[in-house]
Image (cartoon, rainbow over all chains, first blue to last red; front, side):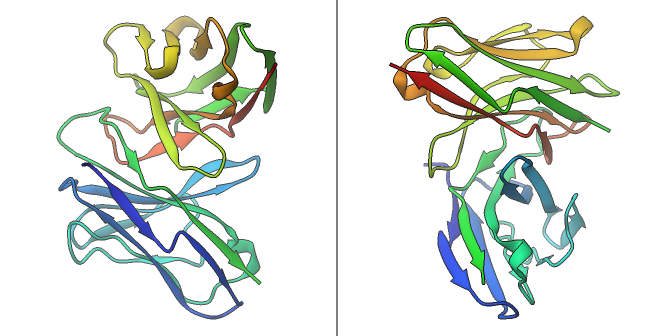
Length: 114
Length: 114
């Protein structure tokens, strides 16, 4: 079954304590992205990756880091989380083989920074 | 740059009534357009997508959307609302020729009244 898996699904952390949200896909997709969802703002892209070792900033990259060492994994790193990073985070993946391809989303990770 | 405007952050209909959720887009190139649904406390599920084939697109759960280039619109409709349709709906446009990024509207929360 095609899947994008995120962990953890729910996390409460404290300001400044580094955390990593993992993302893994089993579809051999080239493209992977991270989005955050905030009430009244929809989803906004944080970072994306077009392939292994190729990453670039999205619309709201401040305070986040990513890496793409393996094709299937695309972790999101918050080096020093702050309360304004409290949000619902989605990982996504898609194939580069055709335009307009479906983008698959993970189930989301609820992050609260206190 | 692409953008999406969803008219109405909240829409309320009676069970059995027509559902109409409005989406207008801005794109300098032929767009690829998507509707996603998010049920409470769940991830995103693709309802339907337009990729330059037929302008009337049928999706899951009885939803459909019509691409109207002259109006730059991609409104989502369903002839008869069910209680189970209550959710938040997001319209999105993909970037030029690619599938690596979606630009989302801010979402429309649909309430279905008995």
